[in-house]
Length: 431
Image 1 (cartoon, rainbow, N blue to C red):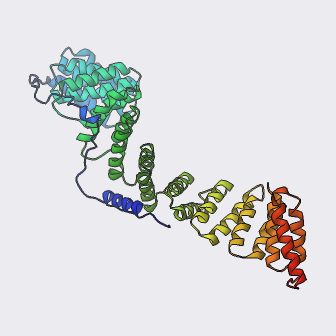
Image 2: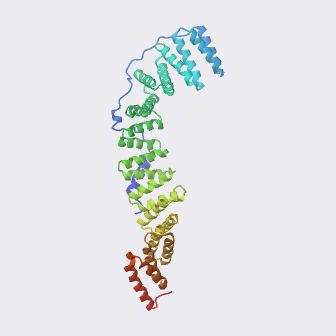
Image 3: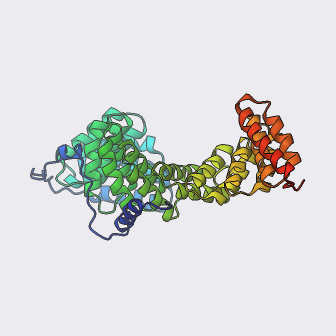
């Protein structure tokens, strides 16, 4: 059987899924069903008093910002620092500190930026509007985390959650990433799920943490559900197809695993030897032997699959099982050339015998003898019978007499010797 109709049907279904333009279905698992909102959208947000700056302060701030705009960072930062130190107004100190931190950040000097972000947040409480303070909390948390103060970073994100009235997938992802890095996958899962849920444009990084959080909790069924969504959302990400196929194997769903790998193959996603070997093995397991051989041979011909004995043997055996004798003959010959012994030449000879191609069988048997085989008596016996069928009686007698030296083949060889002698007596030999 060259193709499995059930597998083809599943693969076709997957094609439809991948080309679907339906609304994205958020992956729901037993673990994500337990996720609850992390924010309270109904809480009241405090409104800070309307604040302003004196004309003198405004001029100094404007001058400093002009220096920064002209890429005069040292001068601009120095002017802002002087303004920060000289002011006693918390609103002014918060705004100025924020600009200093921003200036350092633009130069990628995050270590210097961090204390000013902290100052902006500290002085800004009760002075700045809610959204601005929330943005500061995220900035400070991110920088805290980058310099190694991870506990403080998590505390700031939790503070953001406690005071937020709006879902922000970036913040959810940030919290999930922090938890995942600390190997707290149970705590990472729900923030990752909410990040995926509230992001308008799907992001691989969000899905990756959601997947990892399931897998590290040994939720293979949940991991599979997430990956099914990932291959739909990111159909060109070949690694997701491979992972999904692997998940199905862990669930003993071999046909689904095969269908996924074949879908990757049909989409032109095969890049490695493992890809070809995996699909070939899956076809072999499902007893689609011809396709198994064909896939692995394609990888071999493309130079992706190594011409090693075990790969060549797999191709040959699967052609043989699928009754493609002519292809198997060629494949076993190729396998025999790569092998250290002559066993595969002997198998090739057996296939020639099936086809009654006696001359070709003899050539293969001679090669088997030259390279060496475990059962030498079998080679002499098979060669003797092939020579006898060609009427080469003298050569047949020599081969069969050699076969009698091996106990396993003695009686059969003697029977053929009698047959050859009879042919000689009746002048039925060509030589």
